Length: 282
Image 1 (tube, rainbow, N blue to C red):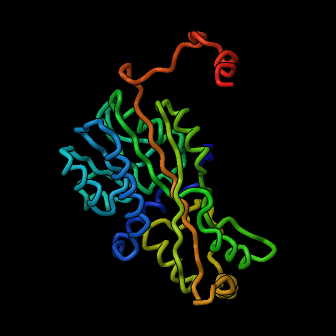
Image 2: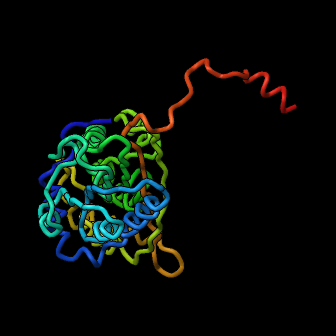
Image 3: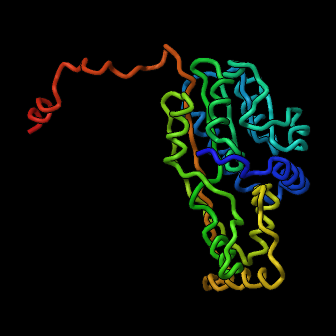
């Protein structure tokens, strides 16, 4: 799952910093992820005292956790957002925290552009104390199909990779288990947004700080190519002149292993065979 040197972390940080200027006008995707994460947190009866928030373009998660009695540490891949939150600029696969520093980590909207996703999950697991909880949300596979098609049409016979690789829900579940997290769960939700033009969609992506950030990105589309992309996008409009674009949000949760957690039964310890159980139901 690791593909070295795909993402330019410097370019990623720079784009997040630029997005900080007008993020509130484009924050719907982050808001959806943050609200969903907090709702899922409310579903657990575990009480948390020391939380790390990774991805802090605003303070909604930090404030919600503080209201729950948590001491909150903020971090972000973008230095401007990190500074505004009173936190640290970080890379998720190289966290600067001691092992067991937190009993809760929420990573919101950043893992779609990490060079080493397994390494990031391992680093977050390490930063948790035993029985600590990790919640992650980010844009995943299946997102932006209309934009992808429009960009392919713009490139003609020599398509370029203009949107960075995306992780699907099954891969996230597997990676969380491989990172050593207990009871990993991964699922997805779909958010559909309607746009009047390709340029409005691109403005949203830039305003969120999630525009494509490949280190070896192809050159920008020329005016002719951009016009082809815009025309292809417009041809997909519905009766009201708007195009429906899809965002797929991947959610994951996992726990730092602890002896206090429920353990699977030892293999061979069953007292009734499967065959006998099935017979009893006939």
